[in-house]
Length: 514
Image (tube, rainbow, N blue to C red; front, side):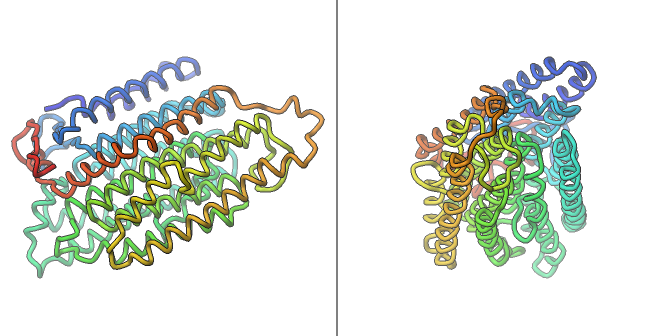
């Protein structure tokens, strides 16, 4: 049994109470502990990802209770890559929060940050649906605290809206879990995958209802239209570094759909036949269109970035809803890209906020550090809009290629290309207003005293942009690995045999499984 796999959950779970109890009034100690913890998370996540890169499945049984009776954590290529992506993102977000001083504008930022990481890591590593629900609730509690960090009526209203929508999702999740347990007697995903196939055709009503409810829950988390209403205000009103960290949270919903609907309810399963294409694909296409139209219509920079996140999730869900190895591989490549690009744009939006009276897309005097901020915005906009040469362009090509030959290929191609054009116009309009038209306005007399973003803030944003460049340069290797991940997802027998087979063993698939 591999004990390292529980470390990404336990480490932040221990650091958070330590920060509250031992360093509550010492922001310097909080920062040091938090950064050290995230660096350790990166090292652990990289080690786990390397360990499973050959196709091994890592298993941890809490209390040495075997599945399906005990709680298990499972690490494969997909889950460890998502853990590593979260840890790397957390480092740059944390550096920005420290550099900008956001972490010192309210109570318990670093403790909540660590609890948030605990929930995200647990959601990616858990091997059963009930504990996925538990980690979703940890996410909800910690994210609400982070969202209202530093206070304000607008932020409080957005936080309440966010909580209400997610509580609806939690309620639906409980209904789905109850239905699944009533039908199968288990909530362990590996055991569930075996038992669902044994349900008689005449007894599938209950499990079909549960599958639909689960899809609705995960669609709420992924902000798929028409379940996206909570995201624009919530992300726009959240502090910049918090919104940047939230860029990975919508991916938790996408991850859950990939995991559950390739292993438990695969496309070829008669029980849930048609569920993927009849509902998920049209909703994904509408999400893509609505998100990019929102980019064009937005009157504030923060809402523009929030709508671009909805659009990017629509792109991810279009690729996922194909439920082919090529589609999942393209989606996984685009998940990494959209997470980095969305986080970078939220931080850039906060850089603009630093030197401006507000984020309204109206011509105002130039901001402090406008040249470097404008350059970063230009790169982030190119990435999110999917223009060459950055990874957004390559990701969209992969999605279009995966959709080639599908029944809705014409619709997919038309909406992807059309929404990309709309996104380009929206970001070009915002950039010209913020940075070009500003030079036609006389700066105020106290322009020299304007607040300038700290060097550490620029380092954090530059780090995310550098990762986008690296994601482009090594696109061939990354896509080859995501293709391997997709192959493992569609051949889950090693995963199933490891979790519900011989306890504590690691299973290495054959070349055919890979």
